[in-house]
Length: 241
Image (cartoon, rainbow, N blue to C red; front, side):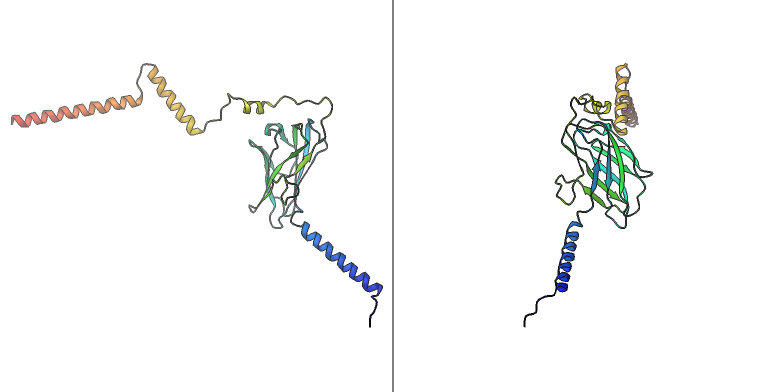
């Protein structure tokens, strides 16, 4: 005998189906939920003195974020970036390809929020700030993928077109020096000491004197000659006896 489903039973089945579907969506979105967000009120090509804010979301429930390293996109030199605000006690340092902020580890689950100021944004449509955030237990989240649909996308700042009349400003002094063909890397302490020693020896020879090595060679020759003379005298004495 067929019994038609009641209105109450149908509503219950629909509610269970909706809850199951919602659970599946949440589980699927879970692994890619955390990321690094970037934003700016002056996100416009060729804009000057632009403050850019970052929010590095915490993924670990047991360790806190202790450092964030950013690889700057092409068109922004490390010398053109200054520190804005960040977690208490954190310090800002630059490298050849970007910058790092680090300090006392935050509490587990707390995001690392900070800002930097860029001298001028390049004339492009978007900027990708590849970021690596390190936790107090050594774990590293690598937000470096340029594909926004990947599980570890780099934070990307979309830029509006440059304002009419906007032009690139002159490069910062640090950037000019680093790109100069005549610029040379800073020598290590060992290299500096070796160069100083070679210079001192060459100067001594140019002044008509002799280097320490030359004096050592002469001394050794004198010892050999003297030793030979003593040996010859002893042999002659023995022959006469």
